[in-house]
Length: 96
Image (cartoon, rainbow, N blue to C red; front, side, top):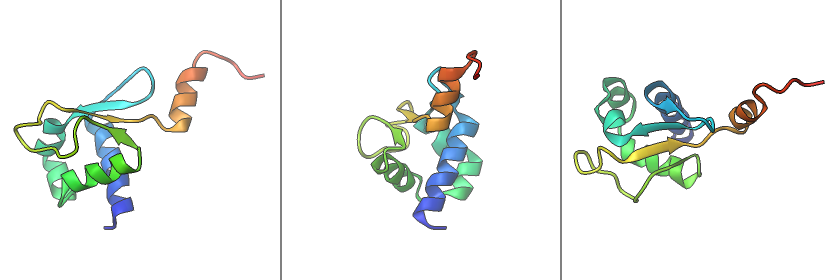
């Protein structure tokens, strides 16, 4: 699996494990991701995949390097996709 594929899988896992926010983003802690069995089987280097996604500005989190235990409570925020942000903004507005 190449980096782009891993980043896409990471986005799927964050959506599965995280909580959707009002702006369409998803929030999950590093500990939840790191300790999830499915993630452990998918990602050989979760921290590397997180860093690649952060460099692509797809998600945000405090710091550069996340370590198990020390950073378990660090929130990882998957930014909303343009369509998700539009859906939330247009919710309740009918189009003519």
